[in-house]
Image (cartoon, rainbow, N blue to C red; front, side):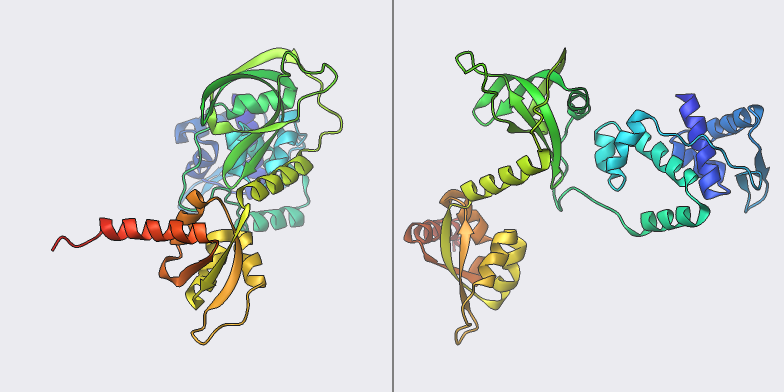
Length: 333
């Protein structure tokens, strides 16, 4: 572990020039005293580290010195997929590997290109989680990721809406969607299933795994399985299943502005087919919505700026919800 830290310290000095002990300690997540000891160790190994005194001082490498120890390890190469997403990399247990891999890549680049890389890092940042929602706790994510890398079976307790179940799964891939991690895996075949017919992959929310045991036996990954294609089709099916009815709405100008923010792509599609505004500036649209129990809450977020014209059962459900709210907030006086 210390050898990795010494290499990271060396690459930091090579890529960024003079750094103070406090800056190095922050990068390495160690104490300032540890930085001083590590610098002494580099010097003892023949690395020409210079210490400049004064307010503008710090540690730097002797002018012209460059290390050639820039080869990537296997896990560092794996981590490069998350080069723009340090948070998800840390969730997967690859945070330190990603940091070292980025430093090695910078060290291997010509000075001008390394400067461009740092400028991109300074100007672009990917924040995966959605607004106003904490990320799911995923204590078993690193172990599940290891099973995905190694193609090893896992045995897990999984919490469903109807209760907890025990599952044996062959993990095929992990997906990060809106700050939420999902596992795509093949469940164990039923006892009476055809031996030649492998079960279809299913999607599991990683935060709902209560326990995860990593099996020792490997499994053969289906050669035709494409994670990106599976996820795209799965997302399409889920959206079609959830938004299986269409509501006709009359929207005020304010609701027109709110619709894409509240309903995403479905709201944008609805506005694309909107009619001409009436004398009050209101327009009628057809919006794909979820079942009444969910649609009522979604539509109430538009307040008095949207009126449901059809279907009748959804209009009635909204009328009942509004009446209940009115009774709840009725002034006793």
